[in-house]
Length: 422
Image 1 (cartoon, rainbow, N blue to C red):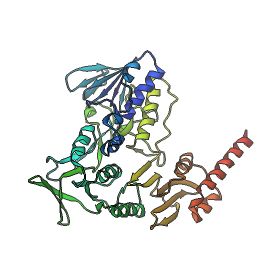
Image 2 (image 1 turned 135 degrees about the vertical axis):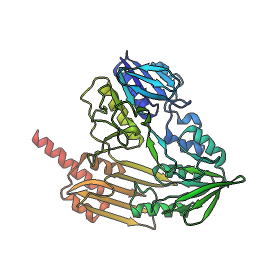
Image 3 (image 1 turned 135 degrees about the horizontal axis):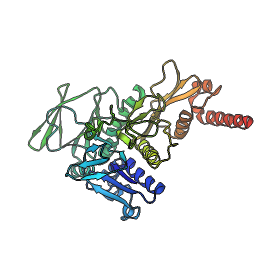
Image 4 (image 1 turned 90 degrees about the horizontal axis):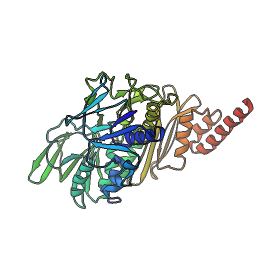
């Protein structure tokens, strides 16, 4: 059996390792298109603030890790997939045969369509090569403009601010992390950043970037111009699916997969940021570009590639946890609420504390938390298990801080009922 995994990020690597455990004699090739060993993009901010060296971003630290598992690491960019021949073609003209194929090619940054994005000093923060460019410029006193304050943007924001640079953030949404936080929480994160010396423009667009000498001049739609030594773009990502455009593999926003992470081709699977799979909360198909989901996808895809057909995906729970200059925020499930559902809210702006719970009947379906980390696991657990809260639903509406009591009471009741039924 020959397995080929395209993409050497967390999803592809975990899949390759899982395949080796399940099929000791199979051939496994892991293809990555960057010169570095497989690494975590989520570790790049720690590299930028010098908490780790480049090697600290590597997903596996042992030098002979891949050789010891007999996983063949191959550097190259896959250009196409020939389903009939069961072969992938690389950009260098070489080809590679497979029995089972996993597409785990992740995403790439999408620069906004504005003049000047190709200038020196304008970069994304997605690869280690990007990080090296940023680290060379983002130093104390440097003027940096960050375009985008979504989840990825705010992770980068943390590193840029801690570098000592004079940081200006431009976000076209009306709040920070608009796809993760509601108006109140997103506004509070903005206030927190500004209180720590970061200039934040929301409901604002960059219209052009020009170079004047060594200075980048960033024009905003309100007519203001911000001078910068470095501009970092974090305005969104797109799944890497172009190379399968003519393959017949079904795609939408990403590669469409079923509950076994399988595409419309029985021998081809997809996982991670590129896979458009079931959303736990809505039942709809969506791409969830977060590392825990990518790892889950990789394990599940590998089990099915190895013939364990009973391994089924229950759906990904929307889950985001963010540290913004020491302020921890999180959102889970249908944090924006369910149509016809009820909600509960607790707010202390002065202390940067916020909790919002969203219910459908007596089930917790979504939550937003800011500055409250004690029971974050409880929030996810109640949502993912669809636990019926009974009388505790109304108690939480009156006092959302009683989460742990509600969790213990509800789960104990489930245990009791299960014992009686047995």
